[in-house]
Image (tube, rainbow, N blue to C red):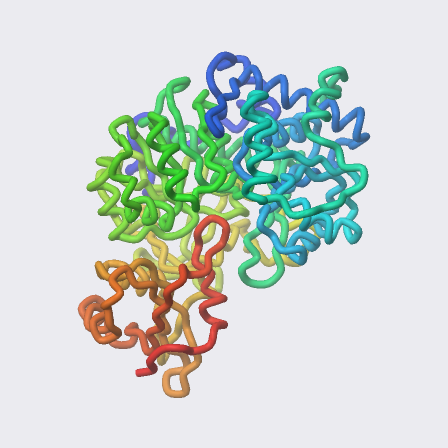
Length: 560
């Protein structure tokens, strides 16, 4: 296949990666823990865990799962944890014991949690006590028989551990009542595991590492089967991609996105393979607390989404953060808006490097080179060992600059959807391309541009309108804090554009906003309905606007 994008690769980035470097994530763990043993691996709430300490703690947890819990290779272990030190310990412990990790959003409702645990067939779960009440409501309908609970401060030094747990439970009252008979305290499990021998489990590229559930913003969430080979490949791909900017054993990356999301997970693993320290942010929505962490941490890299970077830029305290050590800022999960990219460059002096991928691609498939100097409006070019193409409705490639569906091939692509062979088959073409469901185009140099999700496309009198474009124009207005665009039924045009806007300037009017839109959008793309809200727009746990909820809300606002 012709790969015009290779000409855009920075010097030193290879066209292909060697997927055989590590047979599994277990081997990656062993490599990093030996090579960077005394380096800090993870930081959380003022406490640092070294690579050597992580190795010992995850080994103890793995041995406990094998010998005390009686779990076997291939059993599914759910992790219902925010970004705390407990997460990497449980993650690597389960993986090195040969088990499959099922990442769970701690903020799930009982219905969502019951579905995911039952669908995955999880037999064990590690849950933060703050969310144990949700598990209490549904555990009887699942196959879970081993429950480990932990408190926020459990892996902090003793004085801080006791104080933190007391404040969380008794002062802030953040732990609703729960009852899970037979639940085991994680600290006890680690202590018992240290007395057990870890049985080595030989793992290869075909063995499952994760059942990573899709966001479920439309329909029922389904588990993407990500193998050790998929994850190793993407870690190597991302590692090769960021190599021009980063040095092994020297970097500190801030991780405000939840590690249960695949974007943050693979980013974390990629930095882990380079001996970086990852600073875990448990609650980035607490902006004052998040900014305190940034002020206290000389960080060289940060991973986030557009809404997170926008929130930081709008926060008064962010002006006091020292960004001089920063080398790399990576944005993914959703489109980066021009106004956010420009403001970030002005404030930080480094660009927002936008990447693109899916849960099904482990996730990074396309990204801008880390050496870019400014926002381009593109999502970038395919990573090493990755192929991408734009297909029409007949699965045929389209001409340069024509819009179609982005399709991918590469070693990071999932094995399929868990227990859903028909959906797995539907996700791939006869020639092995994975359909992404995202609409985009490729220029003659191999640069890809994302227009929108196929299912979010708005068709106005036969003309296609992409919500991302409308939202980008809206947020260019200085009086707009955030905005979402969706299609609504219209008797005349079939569909019309509805926008929901949160104002930064309370005095902003519909007329002013529409006049601004007319400057940047052709007639059929103009909003027919403008709705102002005072509350933040509904979002997923990683900051994507839930367009479905905007679409399903009553048609408030002015219809034009």
